[in-house]
Length: 116
Image (spheres, rainbow, N blue to C red):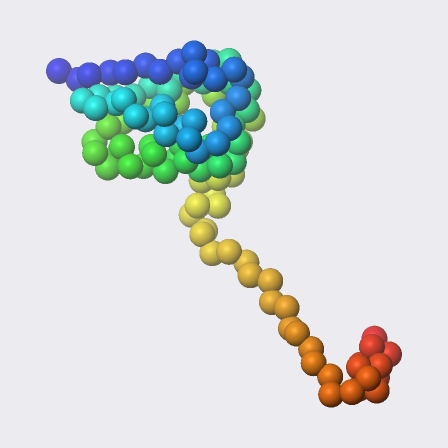
């Protein structure tokens, strides 16, 4: 028999989910569950870090053969989840390269600065 658990997020959060620890609390009591439904009714916002943690936790439980369903997410919540999913698929961070310049004299520094 499939055990289904419905979590009404509005019972835990007042309109928004912010932070990783908030998401961890949601997933702390799902032992024995085969299908998890997260009801987003009343949730208007999810932070980037909470969305990242939610997707990570969903992937973890899905590996344990627990299906996860998101019910009634707002457009804003859906968009944040989509953006975070896309960024997770391309984890390569664009590094900023900064060249540190050293000059052997003030004259060399001045010539460099005046060349721009």
